[in-house]
Each structure stands twice: as structure tokens, then as C-alpha cells.
Image (cartoon, rainbow, N blue to C red; front, side):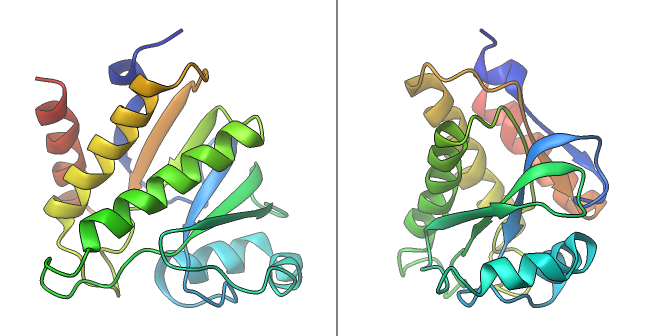
Length: 177
């Protein structure tokens, strides 16, 4: 079994165009009916069947996650999670963001998912500072991996731009010092 340090990584790229993975994580809104940014790109690439399935899920609460098929994406599943909007950092944002990652990882263990591609949750339209989000994300995922016996193979953040890649690479490096 790999260590958390061997499993977690980040790279710059397009989340909807990876090599095959078990699941892609969607930075969704509470309706799960599509939106902008990562959510819009995933819905567009997956095709209209994704929207049809999402309509049956009755939305998703902030900090929670739900799973669907991946349809036209090169994956088995999409795990949708709703991150917090940034309101200055004193309104439970870190706890809600951590809850997103824990919910995603819990679903992954329930659905035999070993490889995941994630976006930087809440850092686009929801305004969460990237460096702060990266610290919460990496700590939550690494802690989860160290507390479970489930055999993840790879958990990779697909970073939209160089600034995000730097933040996640730094957060991984700092966590494993």
C-alpha cells in the first residue's frame, strides 16, 4: 500500500481531459444542474445524460457530495461536491471545505474508486483564496489517507493555471516536511 505522500500530487491541466481515472470531482453548485467554470466544463464534456441524472438527485448541500455516472468523460464516475463561498475566513469556510473533501473520499471508498482527479474547490467563482484552500485540501486528504486502510492509487489536483499549481505543490511539500 502506498503512503499518502506517494498518492497525492498536482499538475496543471484540464480536468475533463485526463487519462482514464475512476472518478473526476466536480466543483458543483447546490442545484447540481450545471454552471460556470469547472462545473460547466464537466457538464458540457459529459453530455446531456449527466444533467438528466443530476435532476434526480435533488441537489446537494454545501460540504456534502453526491455521485453520478461520467457518461462521455474518460472515467467511471463524477463526484459532485459543493464548496463554501469565501466570506473572509471566519464563517466556517475551512470546516466546510474540509467536509467537501471528506465526503468525496468517503464516496470513493464506497464505490471502489482508487484514482481521483480534483479541481481546486471553491477558489473560482466562490472566491476562496487559492493558497488557503490548498492547505485545507491537502491536509484533509492526507489526514484521511493516513486514517484509512483503503487503497487509493492516486489523488491528483488538476490545476487550471500556474498560480494554482504552485499553491497545491507548495501545500503538498509543506504538509510532508
